[in-house]
Image 1 (cartoon, helix red, strand yellow):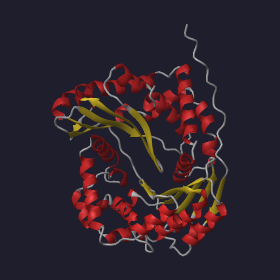
Image 2 (spheres, rainbow, N blue to C red; image 1 turned 180 degrees about the vertical axis):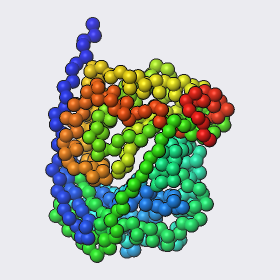
Image 3 (cartoon, helix red, strand yellow; image 1 turned 90 degrees about the vertical axis):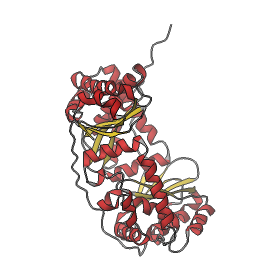
Image 4 (cartoon, rainbow, N blue to C red; image 1 turned 45 degrees about the vertical axis):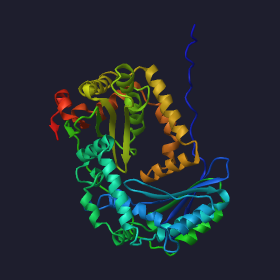
Length: 439
């Protein structure tokens, strides 16, 4: 006889490890958090400039600049800078999104001050020589060619464009001709105009000499221009029940994104929305996944998520489905949304989802790198540590009726945008019942 499933008690309250927050020259900040047992320091210099700051006629200028950041500093060329990092066991990582460019490196604890000095040297004085420009542009054009051939990229770009139009979040894939205006001088001017100490936040997690790190940061940032504070971005998302179709003749799969604007992380109901998302499509055992993957076999890896930016968020279900079941897949996805809107889940089903969301949150903060991710999330959305410390309790407080209510309020099928990449000749008749088709 199979024993009964064990009862999993709710997790205890989560507390972030103690943080040290310090002011740096010119309005810059530092947040230091000791974590882990290995003598390793994870260092990120986060600068509030990203793709949302790029003009409408210069999409991917930020990517061009990120490639240039590997060309060294005003004191060291590319080889000398890479060698200096390698000498302390580090390698430059450049990461970016709509609002942030992050320069990162992981080193042994004893080398943390030297690593901070190198990152601040790069931030305040990157090299923009003319010689690499054509090579970097060739790489950029190759990346664009690859992106335009990938259904996932195309569906994402189409979905974003449908939601945001020509606002910054809607500009995902540029016209190749735009690259003709990218020059070393333009890259240097953009970096100078959108960086500075007022936009800079140094974050460290792991084991390190805090005083040595702070001294290196103060020395490295001293004298760098303050720059303008990062501007706020007022974005108005628009969604309506329309199918935005990208024809891909001969495609064996249809790649779809179905979604709608929702509340952002500053809203009191946001955590409950995360629980709702996990129950509906955000976990392997979620309703949509069990339906169209496990039961019907329409797709291998469907997934829903809540995508966030400051003051903005949307819910989206993403799936690659076999061409001949494109219409039935839409039917099942919208059917599961309607079912949740019409009837609250059972307490037993929801209890498992709550434990999954709570456990995932704690696991995401279990390493120094994950802690830095979380600190950046709090910083980007203007949240304090109370968000983190109350998170588990807020998850466990979500009721079945809360889930149904949020599905009704936020996940409105009649207003959901559908972006679809597939063989129009094979799928047009299938998808016609789900909204007007816009090519």
